[in-house]
Length: 146
Image (cartoon, rainbow, N blue to C red; front, side):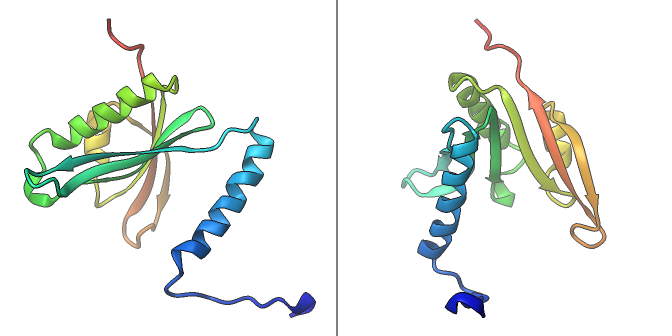
């Protein structure tokens, strides 16, 4: 390849190498976003031994709070724990002055759950996964109750 560079595909990427790419993109974006960078957060559900048994990951960035992952073991679903995690994420969004929420879900995951919490579908990609769909949802949070 020109300039002595090579393109490689890494099936098992080194997390440090991934960090270089994400860090470079974050720095570039900050130049065009008034210096704003993602403020990541993790909300965990832990058992009596302190082990993580479920949780939520997200970030506040560019005026939005994005939930990037919410996971609850099958045996713990339907008990209000996922709703409690989402409520805590929404509370954190309000605390950080960022009441616009965004998340994505696949058709076999939790679309009805998010809709029940007031999230609205803003886009749908059919065939992602094959035979299903990928959804993007948003929610504008009401002001924090007094």
